Image 1 (cartoon, one colour):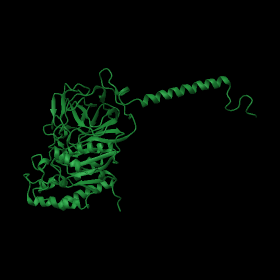
Image 2 (cartoon, helix red, strand yellow):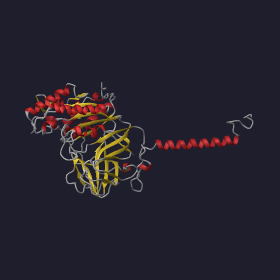
Image 3 (cartoon, one colour):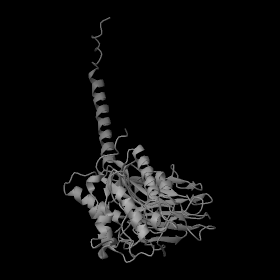
Image 4 (cartoon, one colour):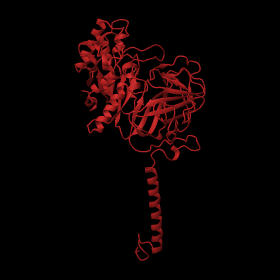
Length: 454
């Protein structure tokens, strides 16, 4: 049989070819419209916009490509005193946090680590703050957070939960408001006590309020919230800083973001903008005041868990972690009723380094800064500090060293901080001291990865 006379394969009659051309044209036009619509959605349109004064349902689809990184985080430190019975029942908690990098989508982590009963959160939201140090939001950034597609979540005692991704443009170096509402009693509250940032509380459910007016109570704590991640084209990974009150920034100016980790990120971003070849990383702060390498606080789970105890949770589980900076050990010296064993502290530090290397993380370690004049100072304790620092400087503990001791000590009396860098308690730095720590940090040490195990 000959396949040609009636119009062989691919040779449709003229009217069919015309119809086919119309169909193809329609498909191309529709595809183009869909593509343009999706490409132009910056996270402020569609289901991400306010409708009738109410929060929209969250879309979990990211608005663009990029890397998920941590832009802010904190360590759950303890059970909040006085919240054992009622927790934050029928109250909205509006945590104020400050970003390092920006992104086009966001997600948060909430913790009930210290809770003794299930924590019910029926509404949660995220928004960019209208200004610094305010509970007011930019209205067009206010989004409802969801968890597995729904607005509510129950977090069992000792557990944490991550929200779905939500489309919202999060700027770098900005305050973000993350609000949770808890209708029922659930305590004690998991919190971070030394935030150096004012957050807010309102009676009743005001998660969708952009004005900030109902938030009449101020607090120096972060409650429930432990991380804010963003889908970012600005960053390739996260630098995680594990430390004690010095990293926590306990003597820095509240609300000014002058912790040394804040200044470090600003320095890194500025150097990259100036054309320097450095990793594009965000920086997150996992400092807990009073933290030690070896010893937990009291309670079950322990308040203020040791660096060894919390390393997996606070470092290895941080989103897209690439480098960890460890600045711990001074409290092992000062808070030990007996003389601290420098070899035990160093062994603890090496254990954390080994865990980091097993996950491919590079480790930068800090020398311990002087504390002459502090009430805990003795010459014997000074000897322990010097022994630990000597081993750190030898290169036998960390992959690289941040020599904060050298940067901040008084050149005429190396046992003490330089007066300009001393907050006045002879242990914690001033704002100028925190800035000096960041300035002395060698950004080249962020390059590379963990050394190969032989």
